Length: 445
Image 1 (cartoon, rainbow, N blue to C red):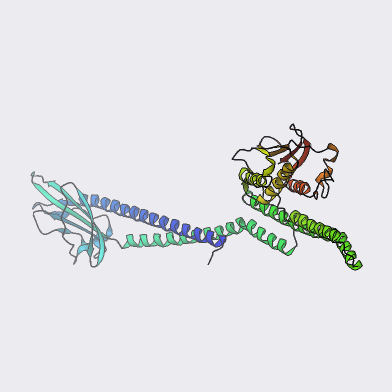
Image 2: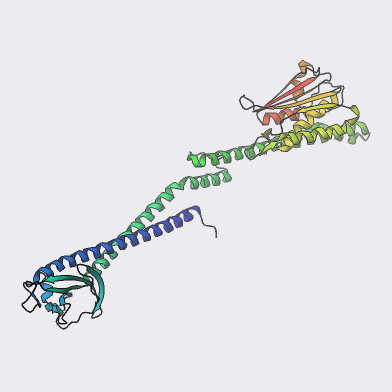
């Protein structure tokens, strides 16, 4: 199953947003947990200072509370906040009233002057623990090592984290949904030109439009212009076929009428019949060639010209080998032009064959490509033959016209060349060559 562009972009956005939201949630959740833990540690540290201030030693060097502890939870049994003071030399510790009936787990106390945070479990409830060790100097300058311990359950801490996590993922989920909704709207708006292209192509297919008419963004403009070029070339091709068929039908009327008359008279002149049949064949060939001429389409690929033209020269040299005609061919190997190969063969096949027919001994062919002029490609073909009279230069570009009516030929080749050049937007001119013969100059844009 091939997903549409909209679905692909939507799924990609969903994956990206999901990954981004997940990572963001994890980072924020971890940051909040660290912040809440730091706040809990700071709170325990403050209570430790209050505990240190509330403890004193009696005459027997035993610790006692010289003042009430600041937090009322210390005086409430099983409140979740506990305090214990223990001499290193004695086993009986001093405990807050909240520790009545509770024994806190033993631990390894830190060094003198150091504090130690850890976690421990009391009655299956996780507690955060702060231990602190000091050296106490009595009035008689006796030294005592005392361990102070504070424990607080993490219930409120976990509730705080849980509440934050619930709110965090709820808001992130809502933000993701809103972003996906906005992304869907953006995709709908952004892909609107593509849907418009599809709608107009359907209308073109139905015949309601002859080309894409809407204005499109720059990213699609080149595509729509190429489509319009293709539609235009296809339409022109169809028109050429229709014209060719119409012209063929019209042109065949006269030779068919003559043939019909000859047959009806039952005294058919074989030479006249063959002449008419040959004329019919010429008309059919000409019209089919004209209809099949591609012209410059947007799908035509640039063609290396030298190999194709060299192939034409080689073939014609073999046909006219007995005349010993010298052909000079000047063309850079990298010259290209956007032209159909069959059109190129038709042009050079006719022009070079005319050169072989009329030249005395020499034909010059030159291709010049310059991008800084109004034409992109200039083609020069000249010979040292009798040349072409100036008064027939324009006339012989038309079908059926010949420069010398006494010479065999049908007057089709140069007309075909001229029509092909016009299809590519070029010009064909006939002039006098410096060699004494004819000069054919073709300029293509």
